[in-house]
Image 1 (tube, rainbow, N blue to C red):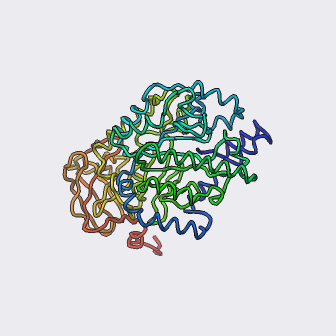
Image 2: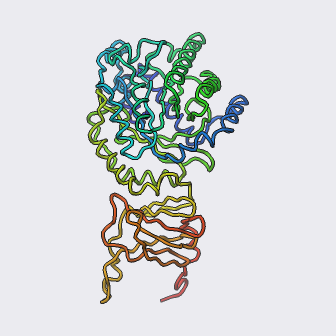
Image 3: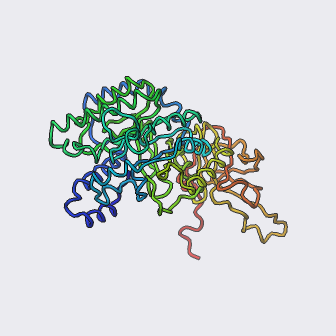
Length: 477
């Protein structure tokens, strides 16, 4: 998915002028991410506005489960896994199409690998899954009548998307489909930009594949478009595309990467909340690659992921975390270990994440916050361990103290989320202080304290600064 500036420079050095088309594709993807950051980019046409208004009428009902779920598994799996050097290998290495097509005959995953993904997703506390049905490489992981470049007629010899759908449903998970509009394999995939006949063929092909996906697998919960290069929404006929999707799947939710607003925005590899009232979902890799990359060991720690979960929830968003299965469908062991640890934490602390709401909550150097109604959840990432200022006192008893400056409403009670044990506290105009806490953190990788307030909790460090007494200002000493 992501293509950094470093990647672009390296590609140009390797490929020279021949890399122009791939560079344009990468630039278009970056532009798509910039569009996400501005929440929509170009002004909508009247037709697009009408389509958005029709979607908006049912949006709250369609997205209720999604807002509650918060956490999903992204799955990037295709021919690129055979190479094992990132999902952009075809473009970055300039692999000719006939050579790349050989991978399709050598892509032979083990039966029902998706069962392991779904079981892992459930163990990780993820509530939905989104799998690549077709990535930029153009290979269809599903049974289609529109091309023989698909999993049934090539190496796998079976419908990998169907296996995934059945596996996700067996674990009670919601089902999502990723679909890349950009296509490096189709002969009209780039030509469609300047050739109307090619555009007509390619758009009909694209709509046809999406129609098959929306027709042949029962109820689908999410359609996750990606990379609308090289056409505009008008060129893709995106309004017509979405209309077809909603006619076939009335309860589905769709993202914004076919050029329309869709139901939610999609910041990639960074966390950025949309404006209030706009749904959003951060998608992120577990290491630095979307597809399987055998030597990418830049794994996020469980603590980093838990912090990301809190940051996303604080902004009212969702977190779609990726795995890149190996060629046979196995999940890399590091991915399994990390996700299982996150799942074990969520099994205890899930109340501080699932179904939480956007809040007016400043973070601190040591803690993050989430909230549901009048309940504040303090995610203490760095446990204080002791109170050094009191160590000189003869009656000092070792304890941990956590102070939160700028907590506005009155606190009614506090407890450790893991054990339910009540926590003592004091509160004044400057800070809320949790006292008598154990020296050692009660949980790992993050300890959570549940704080009940008499109104919606607000943590505002700026508000308290004007209240601080300023001692000896202007006095000579």
